[in-house]
Structure formats: C-alpha cells, structure tokens
Length: 180
Image: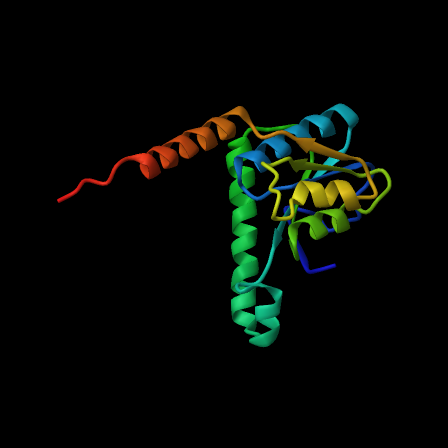
C-alpha cells in the first residue's frame, strides 16, 4: 500500500470503530476533518487523519532517479503539512475524540481507500469541485471504497472565494488593452 508514519499514536492496535478522513490542509479537507470529528463523537469512534504524499516528480520520476535523502525530506514535509493542518483545524482546543495521524505514500484516492479497509470503517472526504477531465479523489473513493463514504460539500467560504476569483479573472480577460 505504501509507507505510513503515525503521529501522536502509542503504537498499539486501534480499537473499535474508525472514521478515516483525508486531510490536505485545504478548506474542503478541513471541513471534512471537522465532520469526521463530529461523527466520531456521535458514534464513539476514533479518527484516523490521513495525508497522502508522493515523491517530488511522482513515483515514476523517483524510480528513474532515486534519491533517499530527497524522499525522506518529502515524507517529513508531508508530516509537517499534516501537523499544521490539524493545528489549524482545532487551534489547540480539546475535542474529546482520539485522533491518530498518518502520512501514506501514494495517490490520494488509492491511499484513502486502502487505509479505510475495515468493514466498520467510515471514510470521510471533501467533495471538492469535481472536474470532467481530471479524476476526482471523491469520485475514486465513492467508486472503490468497501466501507461507507461520506462526501462533505465544499464550505461556503471556499465557494465564495472561487466565485470571486473566477469573476476577477473574467474581468481581467475582458478589459480592453490600452493602446499606446
């Protein structure tokens, strides 16, 4: 499946029900994380926060030119991104739910589906915008997961920011170019 590193975990086998959530630091993934914590509190489960990562240049690039120190630096950067995302999501507040953090080497959808591999797991993901040409992580997880999947819609703030950026770009493209 890929290499994983757990943060803040005692090393014992997880007990009971798990809510597996994909975390990247985006607004959508933070909304999914908050929903996962709410579900875990409601169902007395633990949360497994997963950040998927790949070597610089992707797996194919790494196989062509392996560099173990670069690989270790990329893994450490992923660990740092996950810690930062968790810190920003809860700002040090006690949440009353056990959160286990794990970075997994691999494509995001594949890593999440492979991690949420127990029949009693629930996979929580940010729904994202969905793209016609590019594969969607949410679509991949909904298609391949063997456990229930909860797709959390984008937060209103994210939708508003995307609308603002689209309008700004449209205005920039349609403004006449001054002639000198």
